[in-house]
Image (tube, rainbow, N blue to C red; front, side, top):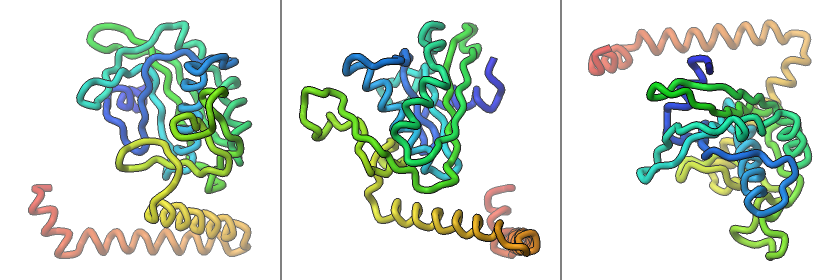
Length: 232
């Protein structure tokens, strides 16, 4: 059985920037047709995007989309579940990512409506080398031009999780670029600090400043008024 924290992702049923759902499917070791490629490259695109997302993300496989846009955890067959192997997926990711993407795969069961159902959960960590860039172009249909809906992945593209609509796509808006640039600069700053002899002192100082700001906020009249208003 899945642990509690993963069960919550399964039953959440609504896509978020950090959660994506997929219907039951079988991972093809060697994609031979367009259907196989859709399975492979949509998951690879989601992994590229989640690696660029704050705190990464989770892909839940075994949930069917309903008419209202939410997802019903119907589960998947053992054959489909067992087809998702770390080495197979890792091989595809490595060939299309500018830097290593750290992820793990959980294949297990969950009791839903008194029935044990199987799911696959792929957890993707936020990259330490922002941004992750796609390094290989892919088409769903090799017989058609590299245009529109036939573009599975595009070389030199940076994929992100967009908020409206929630999906994995190429970065495009000004806000998305600002967020990516700011996080990249912050990560680089922290990496440079780690190399300095006084790193522990600086880190301790920053923690004290954060704690002081938090306490100040908690004791401010405005904060207390908000707590009272919200009955907290």
